[in-house]
Amino acid sequence: MSFPVSDISQAYRSAPERTEDVWQKIQWCLVRNNHSQTCPQEQAFRLQQGLVTSSAEQMLQRLCGRVQEEVRALRLCPLEPVQDELLYARDLIKDAKNSRALFPSLCELGHVLANDGPVRQRLESVASEVSKAVDKELQVILESMVSLTQELCPVAMRVAEGHNKMLSNVAERVTVPRNFIRGALLEQAGQDIQNKLDEVKLSVVTYLTNSIVDEILQELYHSHKSLARHLTQLRTLSDPPGGAGPGQDPSSRGRGRSHDHEETDDELGTNIVSPSLQSLLSPESSP
Figure 1: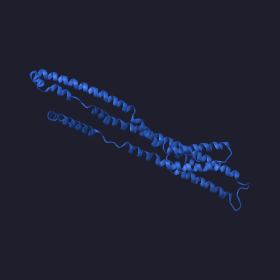
Figure 2: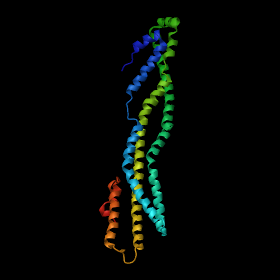
Figure 3: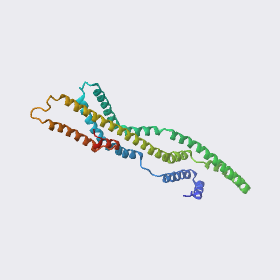
Figure 4: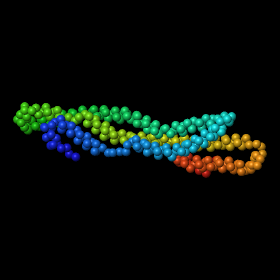
């Protein structure tokens, strides 16, 4: 869009102050219309958080519940290796609970650090430097134009200068508001840069969250399998000599426990989203 130079020049003669205000509004509208609209980052964070956490949260809850039951059942076991595993399992459960706050906490941290980060500080500095450069360039342009006008029309220039101090009036008008330059850099270029930074930050947050949740899922699953074996061994040792109690079939009792354990693993395997953990739950990898 070309600037309405002729209209602006005529308006300056009749109402310079109002013309200045209107001209600034036109400039801001041009900047606004040229700025590409993007999806608000807060909305992108919420959408991505749902994709990252919703599918894994149910699996974490089920594994934590299973491991907690096994920890309670083994809490009185006197064996030191078992107690070490119980302590590790409790730490895993704590990590699993804290992981629910990982995604929003990382997003909030990135937002806080970006409010007064190096990019914004640099843009503020550049805005000041650009303002000085613009003033210098306009001054050079004004002096060159005045010199050429004096060469071409020396008599008219002397008369005009004597009548209305034309050169002084022009010098006052030859300026670009500093707030316009600062706004153009921070609101347009700065926003484009910030949007790209937000995309990168979101990918980092997503990767970190997925990686940590995947590790917690795998460790919880291994802990569950190990604690379940300890429970089975303790129950076997606590069985009375001869196996089954009165009226109970030993083989059926063993099958029932085995069946319960298989059901548990099948249930845990249905919703696991991690490919590496899914391979652990396959029949070929079962102990």
